[in-house]
Length: 599
Image (cartoon, rainbow, N blue to C red):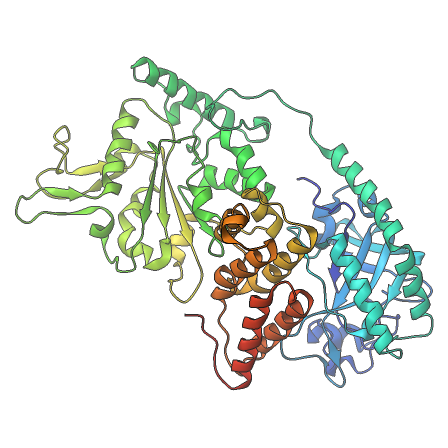
């Protein structure tokens, strides 16, 4: 796995709330004060005076530290705990008040302090390995009472650690300083203000040191280049060693043999069972590096596993994240001879919607494009062409898949070729004079890919479908989306777009690839549009991001979102007037008891 740390940025941990400012004092009457831990823990440990809380001594004046379970950061540091030395660590916790602790309704977590990490020390037996994160003596600060909300962060892949870019980190420290000016009594203890000032004065210097160490660690980690594999040439070759994936190289060899034989006009003797016993994958090795560069290492790794284990792969993500774009480009197939897209209809109820039907007049089976594709794949397989072929189901869950896909779901799980037939019916297949049979063979070279959204217009996938599928969730940071369409924004422009995406992506209103493409086209045509860059960004955000937002009156979560959007508008409203005006209209509507719907 690569090193996900952000050079020059920070990492962040979420921790539990605490009654005494994480100073080493066990909470009074912890049974009735919700810090985030389960009640049984508070009753059996805290109430009994047992000092076992991972977060109890985060800001202990004599020996501050925070404990993390191996599952929280072990995946990141591996066998190199020095990886995090000198890194800046932000700490945040849920807001809590007397007398009950955590607030019942959903509210943003607040920053409570920061470390400059001196060391990460292993503790505990191997079966329950723990890590103690220790700051420098002059490298910690606490500001939990100032109620500064968490900055925009990046998910690293694990359950605990988050990444925060330098601009966001510096912004948060400025907000803490501003909050302290407005609330001079907001420091938890004597000395907190002085520690914060020292931390802030040295922050950029410490970030430079941390950034250099991360850059060196990333460079030292980079694997040595391996010889290029000569496969399909129209896309960049994959430089990842195949030795990590037993069977992949031999599968590739079998496919190459098939290609060479096909080019020579003779059937290949290569066969799935005779070569590797491995499934023919839905992605060709030449495309792995493209997937890694476009969607990240996590998606590439998941595709490797899914391709070896399942014939059905489901891509899930917000609209415009690039699900279809990815599914259509897993094969080096620019002419789409081996890839077909099937748009699923919301009215599909049976196999005839997918496969076709028996004509009551002629008695022939009238095939759909999908069935014709299966017939071509069957012909190629028996001619010795073992190259992979992909079927992409668009909007897979607009109707219940097991109703119209039941034949494919059942037959695709069989390994014996004699079991991989779907009976069609009728006297023959219309338009197939060379195929008198009324059944179709499901070629082992076929893989089925599906794209799904999760909203009120779709149906949830049943356990029957999920058991036969590999599910891959797609997410893309704003920077990656813009990079994909070759758009470069100025720092303040990128900040405005990224901050809005961070607020709305969990609502399915992310800054999508489609929005990025629209922005790219408009930025290239500023003269003809008669607009400046900020006006174009403003209008694209209104038309293609904010247009996907729906809000309900009297919903606390939507009230919270409006509050966050207003803060975003206050910061960027001068340059994004249309977006800020729309958000103000939403606030008025909600205050009047009206729901907000864009269309």
